[in-house]
Image (cartoon, rainbow, N blue to C red):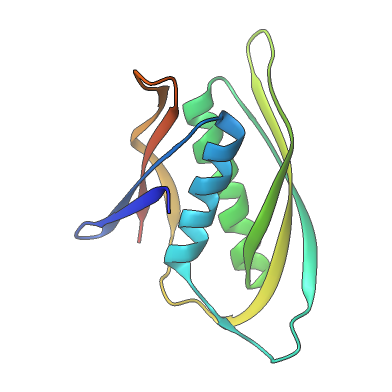
Length: 140
């Protein structure tokens, strides 16, 4: 496991690291879905394919926006997502864009209610080893 979950009073801090930015975004999304949990609605698992897109001025804002898009889809469709595939992650002149495909499984309820991924103390950076690191806070 390459992410850690640190509980706080009304928040949860999640830290992750990965060799590439794409892998970091996937790890952080998987960490969020793992924390939210969920009980599958039926024994017959029906996989729903969803697409998510986001653009932001930098990698940190993009990760927050990307995870909030996934969280929104999760709440709207009452699904948890795994097998996240990044199709595009590009830096332009003044924007970073991401496009990804998600595989969703319907749940009857979530184990934890994540209200939002916050910008408070959010950070995405490369460490001394050249790996990507992220630290985020989930409002619960």
